[in-house]
Image (cartoon, rainbow, N blue to C red):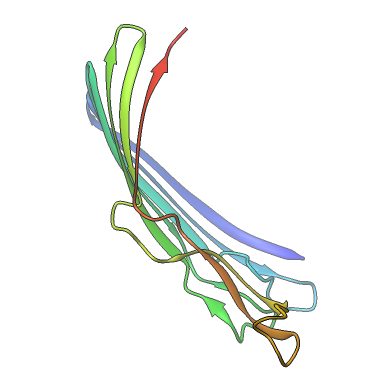
Length: 150
């Protein structure tokens, strides 16, 4: 196969307590015969902002996985996904108490998608069929915890 691409990465700290970062990558993936490579993302990006005001910390991150082919001839494609996450924490001595909200916007994008033949006897009475199979990103989730620094 032949894969070409580039990546741009940036980090900026405009204030001692504020950090902003991001990256973008793009790639062109092909088999030696020129066909596309299924499930090879054409681009991806992430960006984040973190605030550290001791003993508090907070951050927001966005992740985007761009479109990609599901078949070698590029006749079936997936549009990719975008997810936003939030995190807040407070340090108390050796402990960190944190809360996270994953998938803040409750995106219903697909985490991953495939296109191939499958067969579920109770559903596919005519036999195996080709089609898109996918997994939706996790729904909005609140996660809380305590971390101990040893």
